[in-house]
Amino acid sequence: MIELDDTDRALLRALAEDATEGAGALGRRLGLSQPAAWRRIRRLEDAGAISGRAIDLDREKLGFGVTVFLGIKLAAKGRHGLEDFERAISAIPEVQAVHHVLGRFDYRLIVTARDLPDFERVLRRRIMVLPSVGEVEANVLLSQERRPGPL
Amino acid sequence: MQTDDTDRRLLRQLQAAPEAAIADLAERANVSAATARRRLDRMREAGLFRGPRAVIDWDALGYRVEVSLRIAIDKTVPGAFDVFLEEARKIPEVTEIQTFLGRVDLRLSVRARDMADYQRLYRDRILSLPHMADIEALVRVATIFERESLPL
Image (cartoon, rainbow over all chains, first blue to last red; front, side):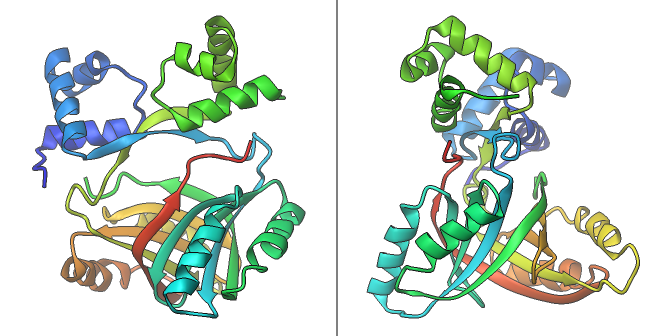
């Protein structure tokens, strides 16, 4: 596991917010030379602390006005039930994320749709038709914020 | 702003490879580099996308436990949401906060080093958050998949 000092943590916080700046500009803000900042970023990437880069799309502006978090409890358990469900659910383009969880539900899904009727179509025709799906709970996303986390 | 097929093609490529050079994105979207640059600049200015940002791998940093806390707020208290959110933002282990319309009002995603660390976090910080009517935890076992891509 990688050991972080305060400068590493500051770099990670800054990069998690915005990675468009170069090592030079970022280093200047944190009191590092360009090569020193570059070396540290490189080390964080090599150690796997940064797993990659992501673009944040404005879903609403791109016509996807509805995001729903779904909790799903499977009706049929057993290994085949899980595998079949995972395979089928991953093939639905509107499904953005699938997490296997422990608790009141078996799976946590994030689904995006153009509007509520579009969401209803995805839910009824793509998700509810899967044979292993039992109980489903839908919560419509109103707002979302990402926090820096334990850095 | 309105997007056309070319814009959406570029966004699809950008989502798939946020770090790719403009020239590569242009080639994959079948447009010239100048067109790609102009269109991406325009879409960025219009706020259609932000980033790239770095994705932190919490597991690699030793935070192996991820818990999704589903919370119902006591809505009889005026301003309960705002007070709750303000306090939740002070907990460093919180990585995401969402609000919902549904049975659940709020969701906090939290990261802990292990179950003992989670227990401490849950008892000392989470349970002392104000105006909670109900709380329920879903512990992540595995991420089956996550895609940062809209079906554009």
